[in-house]
Image (cartoon, one colour):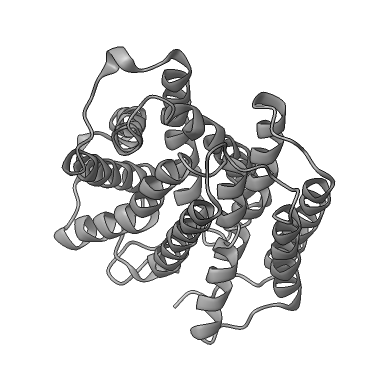
Length: 318
């Protein structure tokens, strides 16, 4: 199956379970920690400049690996491929990468991660609109996962950030929903775009495009660089986000080209569990009964989606 019209065909249309589970587990854990890292970063680093620069710096080690392995010519793209990587970089990573650090100035990372759990719902809705057959276990897993998220957001669940008004929480939660819709839509559309086959090349271009776009918006919004004013905790969060950018997006780009999107999107269910647990462990956020129940239900929903998508037959070669 091709990645899109005019693109090279996949060399391995049905990779082994081991090949998929390594990147998937990495995605679950690494991206779950980014909410804590982002919350630390925005304490003293401007959110947009910090986010944009971490994507740009995160692209560097991946670019070096590609050059060493395949040479500089690996980055040669057609105009159509360059445009596709721009669309993917801004549509998937850029919008999300800008809204998350802005939101975490007003809402805790746990809430942001919970809202992000709506990504699989939008993916399934898009697949349904495209008249794609959705398996029963996948639908049950999605419903169960969202039910778990709702349980975690019940009154007395995750404590809001001090000074945040209910209106502010609602606004930035809706902004996170918009970012989730953008992520789901462009991930879903990726199969119809002419993209470079090499996962590393594609990831580098996406990180560069989104990093430049976010930093440009930050500069236009009046943000300025002042390294002397950055705290040690903010710098530590930024450095971890750089590493997470390289590891996480390489895993995600690898997976969406080789695995069912509903299976890949389970990161949105598991990440809240990781984010809430780390928030409790490192930041002292309260871990209420509703949060514990919600986490159990979320993991059960994830298991159903994994089982449902693993049993789907591979797409036929055109």
